[in-house]
Length: 173
Image 1: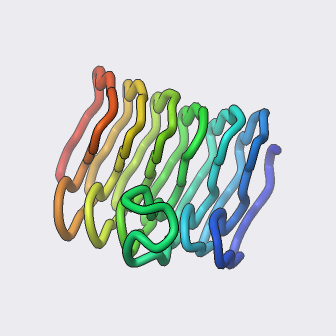
Image 2 (image 1 turned 30 degrees about the vertical axis):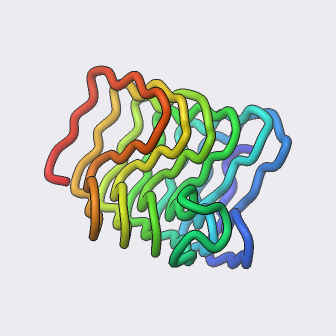
């Protein structure tokens, strides 16, 4: 999937702009803007193996307000991951989650986050920029700045799992 605009879409489940379930492939150079969903306002990845590269994910909303859908893995204003994913060189900004993970949430997910800019996202609970729940990921070379959480961890929140965190800039969260 390349060069598309996903804007102003609404989902009552997951994946406001797009949802990838048991999928393999690449999402490159797309714009996900002003979408909303219960989980993954911009887009959601569930199972399979997806690489998201050089996308712009901005102004999306995850509307879940508690553990109504995926328990403590609920949220993901910009991106929601429950599978194998690589996020590389994306701009994830100005997204909001009414629960966890303003920018990105990984719930039982695995994969890498490399060279992304994750900025100015809001979580009304935990993990303004990033939230990991029972996840295993390598987080390398990202800029995570200006994010806000109304409860715990403006930049990054991890609850059970394994994270390798290398050479990132966490600033002003």
